[in-house]
Each structure stands twice: as structure tokens, then as C-alpha cells.
Length: 382
Image (cartoon, rainbow, N blue to C red; front, side, top):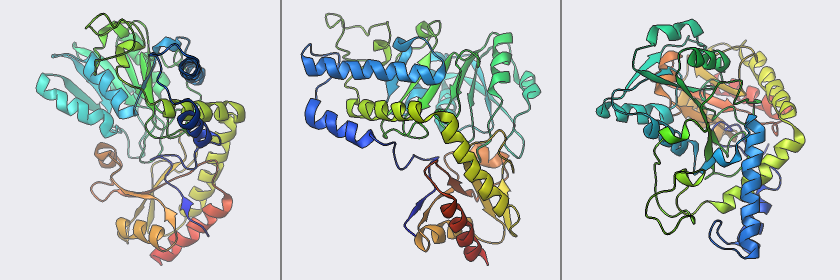
């Protein structure tokens, strides 16, 4: 069998049909910048950028396209929101399932007298919503939380977290790295103030594209992370305070915008339900076969309710790194082993410091590939 790609939680592959072609078309036939020129090809690129902002809105039930900000990745988006919003003396609440894209900025800000409390999740990655009250302080400003674990796929109850934030007048910032393009997200129903997203995972677009959507009321409270040329108000040496220019200084990744535009149109045509059903079908098939095998611990939930198509395994009688290496080198099953940039999550799941072998599926994978992986895992540990 040809190589089997099971590392979609890191980045999707293959990309959506039309992504590469759209990027090549831009580079070879258009090539110009946006917000700089008034000639025909510049306006064409500008229209694609505007259309892409509107497409993003459609996936989040968000109605303010000028408040769609593009960045180079979701890590940059989270840094903008975290470091731009929080000030000395502020306190925030996070879960114990967070990625380092949240935890490293917060840890860095401790030296600026910003505090955080980590709400412990259960060993399967689930969160007890009633535990949030225990960590509320007079100076709590926000809750920052991942929507789903990049380690084990468990989805956190963010509707209830949003209600908690609304009740306690807290800002709610969401890391949707593992759910945007997989779940139907609703900015309003989540009571979110900002949602950071990535373009290259479930959105099936190219690397180098991320962003965030932000409530108009929050915009004045978030300082820009990078300042510079925007192609607007060039007579002023002050960064514009209007959107999206406030957060989009410098030359944008326009080839990436064209690629993301193609992938979002593909998702819109095929429908997230179709993709999600296929991915969860494959996940269920894999889980049902793997959970009865000896010397393997299925990390996280053992069903497909409240989870994504991300599965982690802990080999109790074998070295995880050795199994991962064998799967890739001997059987061409591409996977990821280790701590997945989420040590707090692994401590919660009782897989620290050894980490796990993570396999993450796409709607382009097949039953044959799932069955092949099961057979190869068995060969690795027998």
C-alpha cells in the first residue's frame, strides 16, 4: 500500500481540490498586492480577499466581515488576542487541555503580573463545567479555552463555558484549531468574544494561513501585535484603529488567501456534515477494533460522541516512539508521536512524559486504510 496519511491534526493532506491550482493561478497570472494599487489585477485580488472574509463568516455564523483578521497561523492569532487584551493584574481561566499556543504566551505574561488558573479536566479530557466557579477571582478578565483536544480529540462543552462567561461578565476567547471546518461553529451561540482559527487543518487550506474573528466591542481593548504599512491612511505614522487594518500590518499572504478561498468553497459545496460523518465513521471503525487489543490504552473517550477524528494510543508493553517509528518506516503509516505541544493535556490524560502515538483521520481516508493500520499495529506489538 502507498503511504497512509494519518496526521491531519497537524495539517490536512491532501488539501482540498482546487487549492494548489488557485494559488498557482494567483502567482502566475495575478501576482500583485492588495490595498496598494487601483489597477485591475489588484482589484481582482482584493475581491478574492473580501470574498474569503465572507466565507469565513459563513462558517462561524458571524456577520462582521471587516472583523475577520488574517494571520500566518493560529498561534499568531492567539498571541495577538492574549498579549493584546491582558494587562498587569488581570487573571484568566484556562483548561488543563490547552495547547502551548495558549500556555506559552500566558506563562510568558506571568512576569508582567498576569495570572492564570488551570481548571483540571478528567482523565478522558472532559471538563466538568461546575468546576469553573472554583477558579473565579475578583480580577478574572477572561476564559481562554480550546474547543477540542489536539491530543485525544475530546470536545469541551464550550456552549456552557460561554454561558458561564456571560453570567460573570468575562471575555471568552476560543482556540478552534481542531474544530473549525469540522464542527458547525456559531459565534453567537458560543457567546464568544473572539475565535482564533487555522486555515490548514480542517479548513483544508494551505499552511501559512490563520486568523481570528473578533466582536466589535472587544476591538478597542486589544492592542495590535505588529504595526506598519496597511495601504491606508499613509499620511499618518500611527497604526489605524479601524478594522481589519488595525491587526493586518505588512504584506499579506495573498497566495494563501487564494488557496484558502478555494478550500472554503469546497467545504461549502460538500458540506461539513458529510465530512464529519465520514471522519467519525472511520474513527468509530478504528476505535472498535483497537480497544479490544491487549497492551494498548485508548486515550480519551472510547466512543464518537463529543470527539473529533483524533485518536491517541499508549502502548503499555512497548515504547511509543518505537511503535510510531515502525508504523512510518516499515508500513508507511504517517503518524505523530510525543507530547504534541500540549504537556498539560498529557499530564491530564496520564500520558506524561511518554506521550502517545496519535493518528488523525480525514474524510479522504478509507476503510481499507483503517484496517491496514490495525493490522500493522498488531504486527508492531505482537
